[in-house]
Amino acid sequence: MALHTFIFKVAPEKNGARIDVFLSEALGDCTRSRVRLCIIAGAVRADGETILKCGYHVKSGSTLEIDIRDAEPLKAEAENIPLDIVYQDSDMAVINKSAGMVTHPAPGSESGTLVNALLYNLKDLSGINGVLRPGIVHRLDKNTSGLIMVAKNDNAHLNLSRQIAEKSAKRYYIALVDGNLKEEGGIIEAPLGRNPTDRKKMAVVEGGDAAKTLYKVVERFGKYTLVAFELFTGRTHQIRVHAKYIHHSIVGDSTYGGTDEFGVNRQLLHAYRLSVALPSTGEVKNFYAPIPSDFRAVLKKLRSVTFK
Image (cartoon, rainbow, N blue to C red; front, top):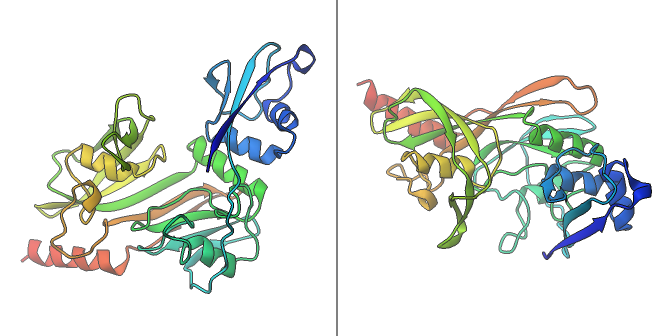
């Protein structure tokens, strides 16, 4: 999809207007909801400064920029794929995604995705992210299992996206990593961007997007460590790259140097807990997903060896 940047100058009579209202009117064929999502995603700038608040008031003479991608040319089809629905109401659903399932259709993965399953299993999905990503607020890598939020309408989508952007929604993961961590926990702050030598991978790069991950040791197995992670930002492959950065790659993650003596053929990374405020009521709910069987089998084997 092509990315287009639209630039507008704020006329004196528009001084003080809300930026989401100004841009939706200036663009003409772009809804206010879509503009708000662009703002939350960091794709809107005023005089070169990124604007993250939809209620920001524009100033006369300012130059506004907004980056918008072309609409998806394809449409995802509903497929009868069973889903583990942890929770749902009229605004949202929480799904426990299995490892091996791609979040949304893309070249090479046009079917069998979470979106294909959602279209069959849920009545409504938000349309903000287009016809290939209906309802998708955030994503999990194909071989990462666990909890993912889905929006059923555009207002809920904006609400959930805002919670992620403002870091009030909390996402927790558990992973088995190579080696024995020296510390009991800590914070990893290292900017992420495309690997300059392999564009399919991410890497810690100077001038990349700010990325922050908290970690805490849960259990030690000598050669391996079970670690809990909390995301403060949600960059592509963030936990996987940050784990490699501290020289403790995730077991099974061949992309980022993880070993796999257990033959799991996927990174042992699981999104086990999600804390989010329900869009309609504001009530904060905590959702949990048990560690999947392949991950549990590895832990059982390690414990049997450790405690002999």
